[in-house]
Length: 203
Image 1 (cartoon, rainbow, N blue to C red):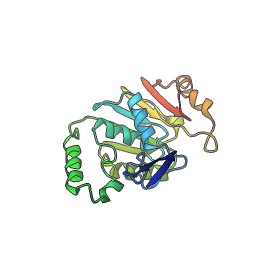
Image 2 (image 1 turned 60 degrees about the vertical axis):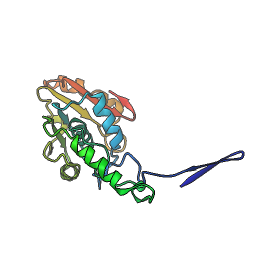
Image 3 (image 1 turned 45 degrees about the vertical axis):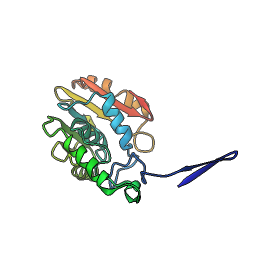
Image 4 (image 1 turned 30 degrees about the vertical axis):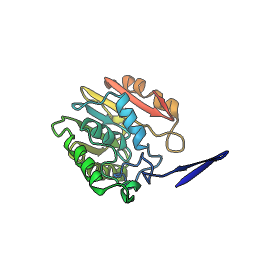
């Protein structure tokens, strides 16, 4: 609970969520410099992910971008697998929470044809991404494999969503911006649609 004083008025703020709303409840651990789940979901929106999309991420890390894209395609409600502070409030009946969770489950698009594949050079990151996908309820729609980005090839009709490492991890934003050109020079097909995120910028 927080409060603010403005002259003779007191405003009281009641925290109904607990953990930040970007925490969906499936990512127990993450790799270095993980992207927030809410930002990953926004990138999936910008990438126009649909129920029949095929998504690739050549720098998957802990899998957040592919997982959020899968949840969007399947219409899985954000935070469906987490708990909220307001669930402990006596004045909010428990059956309301149960009713809304069931409503969200009923609206899941189980017939969606979405598929997502992520790659990372770090085996530990790949193992973590696969575990996170299962916890998020999309383990049957996503898979993650160990691979070097220099061997990455965008597959037919794929939408590439990615958050390349930068700074202390690897290189900088200019290197990320040059990825499509490097793919073209190497003779590999440039993705039909590619969306990269770097410190709030799309490249």
